[in-house]
Image 1 (cartoon, rainbow, N blue to C red):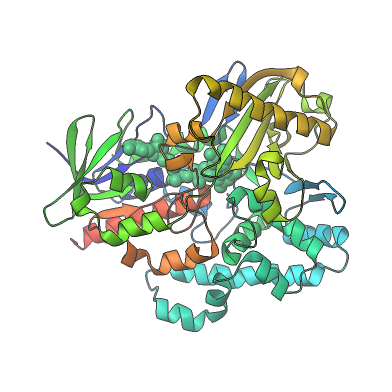
Image 2 (cartoon, rainbow, N blue to C red):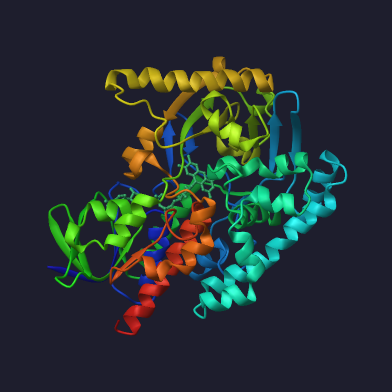
Length: 502
Ligand SMILES: Cc1cc2nc3c(=O)[nH]c(=O)nc-3n(C[C@H](O)[C@H](O)[C@H](O)COP(=O)(O)OP(=O)(O)OC[C@H]3O[C@@H](n4cnc5c(N)ncnc54)[C@H](O)[C@@H]3O)c2cc1C
């Protein structure tokens, strides 16, 4: 019988940081990953002469951010050193139609304000007010993440923060008098989170936007895989163990309802603490019904699953210069109204195209380039009753439609230069990550299910002793930084409880 202090289920961003944290603290730690490699979303794959980034468009909480919970601080603590490469532009946003625009915006507080003012004369002061509100957010967030956190105190001392937390980003911008066109440009990143800005939690979106503005978007040289492998090395260097091809099929409970281990490949492994990097829905699906708190089931059912993507990865036999591609991130929309774009997502409502060679010129061989299309889809978008033999046509048609639209919008020829093509849909992500409906972000960050509510209620909601959660489905919402940060939080909490003998 194998016994560990800590077993971590899943080697995604959250699981890797959680495991490294407990291993570093000296606890006997085992990470179990169903795949043959680490990272979950944070990975890469090779086709022909191209290594494609699977997920990361850009890391928005990067190496230069000195905030207590930044990715940089976490990596430093875990002896992980990653060289990052920076993009000098945040994004190019193209909105088609009569009220459309085509703007390029740079990172950096002053650059950002200058570019916004140039695009929408007279908007500077209101946009500044909006961005400055983020300082309050940073302070309140740091307090919420601190051991001294007390919900009553939060409501007293950070009343403005709590008030803003129950509003949408659109409400917040209206209240600050941000002109409509400036609002439209500020909303550009909505597609990364998959919630239209009339329902997107104001603070969640503002913190994402501010993080992008503060430091230029960054990419690791060897794709996300470099970060995931470095974290595995860190775990091993602390005496921890990572087992691949190890899918957890069952969570084990004591008679009193505490988690005591997991079952993997028919073997039972016991642990004092189990940290789940997999979504609660899948933990409960792998637990005996009598052990699942009713409130936990209700919560999993009440929460709305977040978005997924159709992604198209293209390896092209021409350089970006030859093709006339100039930007790293281009957001293309048919409308600036994010609700309409959301509803019309299958018809070019909004999609993003990245050219990694702009950020990392040597990302592919000389005379070649790569494009990465990201098209938002939601649970329920996948056609019901699709037969296996229809799937290939479905995804090829989807990809072709968007490649043609991109060619037309940007005036570039891509189709005739395709050397490699990979298309992933929500079915791919469902199979790879094992998530319901292929959701990649956990639960949607709508106004009612926001980061503040999740943080305040985290101890009330998770009632299973010895079980901790981390990752995109957790309290901080989706994204690489949130995965790493909640991994660190779960690891630290488990260490604290182990030290106390709890
Ligand atoms: C196409 C795409 C683009 C994205 N772009 C960005 C971006 O630009 N910026 C950004 O910040 N975020 C981006 N994200 C989101 C980001 O990748 C995720 O939010 C983050 O990686 C989630 O990390 P996680 O800790 O939740 O782990 P996950 O990546 O969900 O990993 C969970 C791990 O658990 C494993 N697992 C599942 N079930 C079991 C089981 N039963 N037993 C053992 N192991 C199991 C899985 O194999 C996986 O390795 C993107 C995601 C995708 C898919």
